[in-house]
Amino acid sequence: MISLFRLQRVFNINQVPTVFHEDGIISGYRHPRSSATDCIWSLFQLTNETLNIWTHFLPTWYFLWKLVTVVLIQTAWQDSFTWPLLMFLLTCCIYPLASSCAHTFSSMSARARHICFFFDYGALSIYSLGSAISYSAYIFPDKWVNGVFHRWYLALAVLNTVVCTSLSCYSRLGFPFWHYDRGTVKRFPEYQSPKFSKVLRVVAFAYPYLFDNIPLFYRVFLCEGDGCTDNDTNILHYNHIALAFLTGFLFATHLPERLAPGSFDYIGHSHQLFHVCAILGTHFQMKAIEKDMVTRRPWLLEHSRPLTAVNTVWPALFCVLVNFFIIVLFSLPLLSGATGHKTPRKKAGDPGKTLTS
Ligand SMILES: [Zn+2]
Image (cartoon, rainbow, N blue to C red; front, side):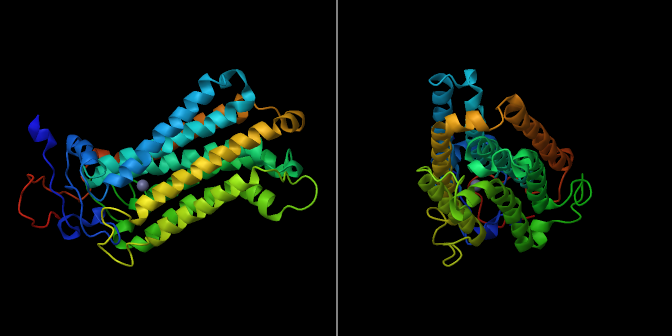
């Protein structure tokens, strides 16, 4: 039992395979062939992933508490008008949970790392659909409600999740079975061209976010005259938008560690700040959605199309299934054979030779 608590050795960037490298992070890497138990124990030891894990694991419970409150106290299942909020809150629980699991178990092997982050990307994609479902129900400015864009908005958001998950998964290894298969990695975008891979991933996440927010951006930045829904929820929307752009900026730029490689390995690197800003942004987004739902309820019930399972629960369920299928498709070649990233498991305490094979 005592050995379970033994601190695991951490490694520097030259001792782990390239696939594990993070820009500007020099030290604090876990063993690239950690066991599942090692990964879980690493939560209680400072490595360069520890705060990445906690900054999403703790907020999962916050959003879960919020979801349970809405379901139990407001008996939301009896009132279909609150179903879009429920879908949104559910996706707010899924994405930080998937992310914290991905960061926890990503050091088990190169293959595990790819599969973990495929799930992370899929969960983000589902969160973007959760946002779209709630925006379609509560956020559209009065003058756009029931218009052509409103009628097609949700269908396009569903399509976007397929594009977003496929593109972000593609950005790691290319197309499954074509660029990588049982024994061969014919092409490896992230390894051969990390910048191109990063650009693809930024586009994959920025595009659905920008699409989802078209009605909100129009409402709070461009709309003039009647039907603009200019209410006191807008300040919450501004907070959410500012944090969302800061989140994207941190993800894309790798600041501050890019300016001082090695100085922020454990605390303060961009991925931790990215997680914190994403959660704060989601918090303000949730508050804004809730407030618009309550404030606009009488007007929306009278003028907007009724909210049923068809425009709330079914699109969410459909997206979960389709995204799961895409992730399985990208993971299958990794599950069925070696990928060329074999790294021998070394005992903790081995001399610090390179572990790259
Ligand atoms: Zn992350």
